[in-house]
Picture (cartoon, rainbow, N blue to C red):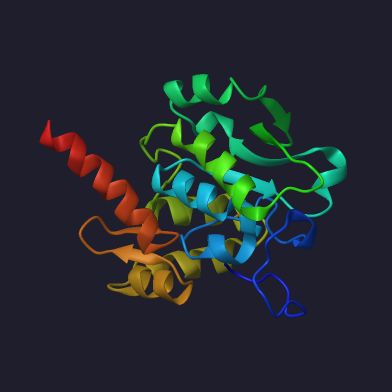
Length: 213
């Protein structure tokens, strides 16, 4: 098991030993390996399963502070769920508005003596009930969209700079180079930019499957 704090020299076994991870709220996960870094130990397996099923998690909590509340939770982006997964999620909670996104919170009861293993098992059982879905919350970016966004954001205030940037990006190879400079994945076949190669593979895998039928 992963240790969440260097103070501990042995594997964490009880929930009351798990320290809060304070950097997961709304953080964009673009690679599965990030889950190990930002999700608290008891929820890692479940969040990895949600990732594999193309279900978008928003944030989660399973640490010593949740014992007083009597439950831990995983929040999902409700509108990104398939219709079937929405029905499944609504068995565990009600969707609600949070700024510009609708979320649904899946609560998992915990006790004072809860172990990491027992909690992880309970949460995975719930995650197992969800179906793999289309990753339609993943959106590529085209050069045209990038230029349009730049014009919308800065065109009125800095028209000359925007024009120069547009001319630069339209040069052969410039768009691909800019995407890579920003750490994005560039697909040369479709000339689109993606937040990560994993995003591209998820999207491409689904539509490859769709084309087989």
